Every structure is written in C-alpha cells, then in structure tokens.
Length: 95
Image 1 (cartoon, rainbow, N blue to C red):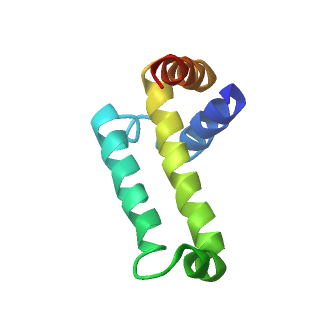
Image 2: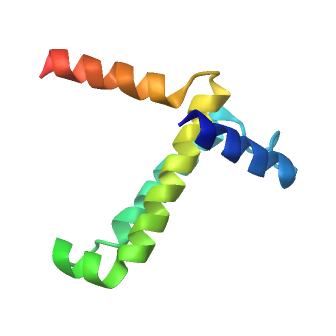
C-alpha cells in the first residue's frame, strides 16, 4: 500500500498536480463522485448483467475511488495499510 501511495504522489508531482489535488475536502468529494460513477455501471441492471457488460468500467471506477482514498490518507500523513488494519481490527471487535 505504501508503494501505491508513493506511486500516486510521484504521478501527481510529474503532472504538477501535487499541490492543487491534495486538498482533503476535494479528495473526499472526489471519492464520492467516483463512487457515484461506479454506481452508474450497475444502474438498471442485475449484478450479473452489469458485470458482464461493464466489468472494465467497474474496475476503472473502483481504481479511481481507491486512488483518491489513498491520496486522502497520504494527505493526512498516514499509511493506508495501517489505517485499514486498524479499521478491520475495530470491526472484528465490534461485529
């Protein structure tokens, strides 16, 4: 996960987007927007139909959500693997 966070940060630097695309509020908004695009892949279809017709688009939208989520975690100075592990442990205790 840390390697992905670094790779995303490098990509942003290469494009000169590092400063303008690291605002936490905007990253949170972008996660929601990309999640909505993911939902569009399933709209008015059964799961099977949506996957058979849109699998590539579904995977691309999931990747977009994950990229923005990793950017947000990075902008907060955290390691994604640790954040996810902590949440999984919390869920184990809770459920």
